[in-house]
Amino acid sequence: MNWRDIPSLKALRAFEAAARHGSFSAAARDLNVTHAAVAQHVRALEDHFSQPLMRRSGNAMTLTPEGQPLAHALGEAFGLIGTATRDLLDRGSARALRVALTPSFAANWLMPRIGRFWARHPDVPLELIPSNRLVDLRAEGMDIAIRYGRGPWSGVDSMPLVPAGHVAVGAPGRYGHLSPDNLSELTGETWLVDTIRSEERLWARANGLDLDSERVLTFDTAQLTREAAKAGLGIAILPAPIVADEVAAGTLLKLCAEEGSALAYHVVTRPGTLLPARDIFISWLKDEART
Image (tube, rainbow, N blue to C red; front, side, top):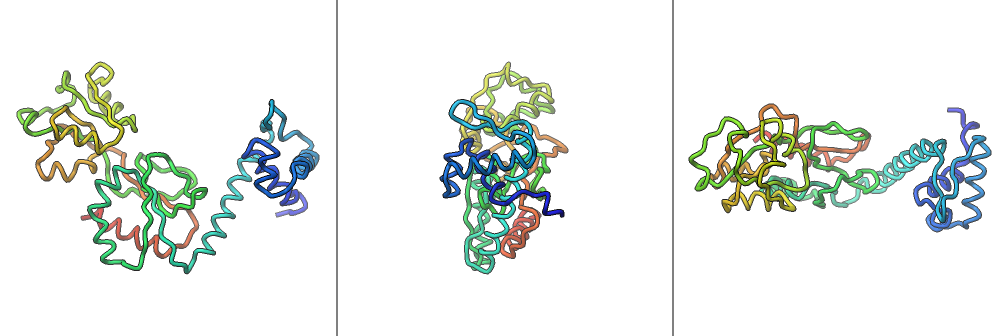
């Protein structure tokens, strides 16, 4: 690397903060310097590259097309530096392993099993953080995420954990007389879906069922959708792991199932980090998934 081509770190930090906040004043507060210092650093960078990087838009500062890729690269680079330093500071400490996961996966798959992990590894503390939003592992200091989808995702390492193709399920007392070969045979029923995802509608359409033309009840969470199905309110379309225990216990009847789906719950981690506690937890997750 030719360091003579790289501007000062202070100038790069000031520009990245200004780009992130869209304001010289907010960047100055973030860096504990003056507004004038931030503005001077940004001007120095523009002189260095001989092109404008930011321009005023009303009361805010916006990136120029030339400044956007530099701001993006600096954001990622400073994020990596921050993660590396936090990892070094945390290494050897007793901090809890931070795990981000969807509420439905936490409630329906992980929590019924987590007692076995704590019994086997009482020295590995966990902080479980349920959320339906897509977390940024680096920016939010997460060690692991359990992510639903097809994968893989850029910027992270991912490994399929549990296949999660869709199933259509209903209460046996209401739908026990049915044995459909395809979703299209269930046209005219009441359908129950989770509002979080759109995958259910895509699977239904691919199998001859247009939910836009059906009577559909939507719920805020997968758990509510499943409970509505158990109460006989209609047929729920959900990822298979969310209803696996109910199907096995006979409280829900599997009417149709998605075959050969790429959908799964994935274990997602930050690349290049060494965390023994994380590897212990992932190994346990894999063991549980196999059984």
